[in-house]
Every structure is written in C-alpha cells, then in structure tokens.
Amino acid sequence: MEQLLQQHPDLQGKVVLVQIVNPARGSGKDVQEAKRETYLTAKRINDVYGSPEYEPVILIDRPVPRYEKTAYYALAECCIVNAVRDGMNLVPYKYIVCRQGTPYMDKAMGITSDSPRTSMLVVSEFVGCSPSLSGAIRVNPWDIEAVADALNLAITMRESEKQLRHEKHYRYVSTHDVAYWARSFMQDLERACQDHYNKRCWGIGFGLGFRVVSLSPSFRRLCIEHIVSAYKRTNRRAIFLDYDGTVVPQTSIVKSPSSEVISVLKALCNDQNNSVFIVSGRGKNSLSGWLDPCERLGIAAEHGYFMRWNKTSEWETHSVADDLDWKSIVEPIMRLYAETTDGSSIEVKESALVWHHHDADPDFGSCQAKELLDHLENVLANEPVVVKRGQHIVEVKPQGISKGSVAEKVLSNMVDQGKPPDFVLCIGDDKSDEDMFESILNTVSAPTLPLAPEIFACTVGRKSSKAKYYLDDTVDVVKLLQGLATASCPKPKYIEQTLVSFESII
Ligand SMILES: O=P(O)(O)OC[C@H]1O[C@H](O[C@H]2O[C@H](CO)[C@@H](O)[C@H](O)[C@H]2O)[C@H](O)[C@@H](O)[C@@H]1O
Image (cartoon, rainbow, N blue to C red; front, side):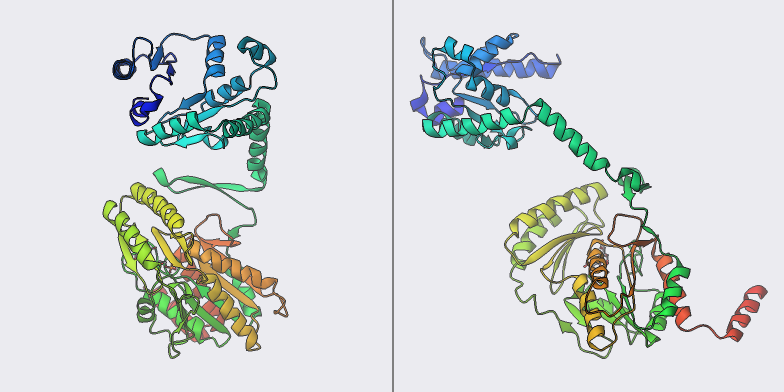
C-alpha cells in the first residue's frame, strides 16, 4: 500500500486498504513480532499519506463474523491475497462469490439484479488457488513494485474488462464446487490404484535413496538358460550393449573394461553369426582405446553421433547434428551450476555438453540437476536439442541422435544385406538405453522383417523400464554374456577335464 501510494500519488485520498487480521492460530513470539510490525507499518502509512478525513490503512484486529466479512468482500473493488507461502487459500473464491451477490445482497446494496458485476484479484503466485483463477493478476509478493503496479492496474482497469474477468472467475468458482473437488479426487485416486493389484512392489535403495517401485508381473530376471536356448536356435544375431553401468560398474573408479569383459566381447564378435555393438554416451577416443583388442566390435559413441562398424572401418558422423551453435547458450548456464555446486563439473564432447554431479553432495547434487534440467529445457525450447538426465549427469545433445537410432541403423543394415535378425539382445542401465529398448521392440512389428526375431530387452537393476527383463548388476551381465559366448564356441572336452582336475588339485 505504501509503495502504491508512493508510485501513484493520484490514488491518495481515493483508495483504502482494509486489512482484516484473522486471529493467529498460534501465539508465539514471532506472531507478536509480526503483529507489532503490522501496526507500525499501518501507522507509518497513515501518518505519511493520511489526513483527518482520510485513513489509507484500516486495520481490523478482532474476530470478524462471517456476515461482516461478506459485506467487506461485497463492497471491495479489489481483493489482494499476497502470501509468500500458503496452502490453497479460499479467500479469493469467497470474494468472487460475494461480488456476484444474491437478490438479498443486491437489495441491501441498492443495485438491481441486472447490474454488471466485477471482481478484481491480485494474488500471489505462491498461493495454491492462483493458477485456477485465469482472470486474476498474479504477482511475486517479494517484488513490491510489481505488486503496487498490479494493484494500480486492478483499480484503474476499464469496467468492461473487469466484468469479463469476473465472468471468468465466477464461471470457474460455480462449476468447481466442493462436490467437483471430491469427485475429481476420487477419480485421481481410482486412476492411481487401477493397476495396483496387477503390479508387484519392490523397496529399492537405502536411506534417502529408498523408494518403492511397482513393476508389472511380466518384468522378470533374464535367465541364462532361457536366452542361451534362443541363442542356439538362431544365427543372425544383433547384440547391443551399453558401456557404463552395463559392462563396467557405475561405481568403479577404473573406467576401462576388465580383461574378462574384453575376452567375452572378443568371443561374441568372433562368432560370424553375431553383430555386436557397444552403444555408449562416451566419446569415441576413450571407447576405441579401451576396446581396441576387439577387432570385429562395432562402436557407437556419443549416443550414435559417431559410429564405426569394426576396428578397421572409418568413423561415420551423424549428419543430423551440423548445427552446434546452442553450445554457446548451454555452456554458461552449466558453468553457473558447476560454480554453485561443489564437486560438479562440465564435460565437453564433440556433439554434447554434460554436467556431472557424481562427486557432489548426493542430495544437493540431484536437486541442482533437477533445477538445471528445468532451466535448460526452458531456455532451449526452440533449439534443435534434447536435454536428458542420466546417472549423475544432465546432458544436452542434438535432436535425432539417440541410442535408438543406432539400433535402428544396425537392424536395417542387416535387413538390407539379406540377413534380417532373428535374435536381438539389448542390455543397458540408463535412461538413454530406454531409447534402444523402444527401438528394438518396434522392430518386432516392422513389416520389413519376414519373421519376428527373438527379442531380449534387458535393463540393469530393478526399475521401471520399457525392457521386459532385468539383471541385477554388471557381474550378472558379464556372466550372461559368457553363457552366450560359450554357446557360440563350446569348450573342447579335454580342456574342461584339465580344468576340473586343476581346480580339484587347488
Ligand atoms: O551410455 P553410457 O555408456 O552409460 O555412458 C553414459 C555417460 O558415461 C560417462 O558418465 C558416467 O561416468 C562418469 C565417470 O567417468 C560419472 O561421473 C557419471 O556419473 C556417469 O554417468 C560420460 O562421462 C558421459 O558423457 C556419458 O554420457
């Protein structure tokens, strides 16, 4: 009010704020302090802007009966609810209803039933009801200049617009009554519980990371015997493996693959019936260095921005992503979050930028990651990019580049070569791997395939996923791959015997 009278001196003598001080629910020191400050502020405003005939702020600090409040609401040209923190707050709704009036109230106010109605609302954006009132003027209560401008606008707006706003308000309030709220609450509850009895619930994680996930009963562990038998029945196989969290543990400090992983990949690649690909978000140099011994292995780096079919073939670069100008928008924003989040850092890839918070405080890191994701999505709405969360990362990469497109490319290449896949295995732990699952699941229904292949989409860790199968960790993944490699190239009998006798000697 002080700001309003200061910014708009023409309103002095014309506008009065009736501040109804509802009795506080508590009686602590802070309540007394707030009361004292309210009185002092009101006095200050009245001393500066008032006169013997004009009191700009009227404080009503006593229990006010409903009929009296109704009278105030019915008379007020504008209602301001400007809490910095609140629940739903029904005052704006009550004000609208009172401004609509009743025949009895009209009579008391000396107006006819066809008199136009208005209701002007200035509401804080932090009040629960504010999004529902499309005719209200929404403000940030901390921005007092904007609040003063909003009040001025509310008072000085053309009558016809005030009426239109009231119509909107009243239509909403009269159609969204208590019965409506109860009905929609019940509907939401029913919808949320719909599949409840068809799903199994699992408690996953510890401490603050604990969560309950409900999974469909068809989601099951990928059993080695089951997949090995399908593997043996087939001879045009596509195998897609994610890197971090799939063949190398997320928690491992050493990021290069173990000798076990290298040898199982080599064995799988050596089977002429297999097309094996590592599909990763990592850069091409690290991947090609680490996987150097696997000559026949295909690698898709940076989610498929780079791809090579085997060690001797050239890297192919995805053509979709020529425009990388967005990097200059993203980098300063990520730098801001890196500076304010201790332990976080930025990774610059050829096609993407990644903000890492693996080494930051876990809770603060994930809160910052959520905020950064939101921030980037807003700023980049018109750019040809996608913003994604991964394991302790927020990544911005070009649209059209995804692990799904890698799977699509490999599978259609097999079809073009007259070797349509009859077995597809895809394992990954991350959100970016969900694109691969989706893409290979779509191939089942593709008309280009003469016969539907055996599909094994498998996520690492029990969580909600498009994959039908799960394995618990990278140890299980390697065991499963070893099972397949053995089926490709069974060990000669005498080696097995030697091994048994050697082990028994130990
Ligand atoms: O597709 P993936 O093989 O799963 O790779 C995804 C990301 O891997 C890398 O990040 C991961 O390792 C980091 C440590 O080296 C760790 O800090 C982070 O939390 C992990 O997500 C890589 O740096 C990213 O560019 C990849 O997108």
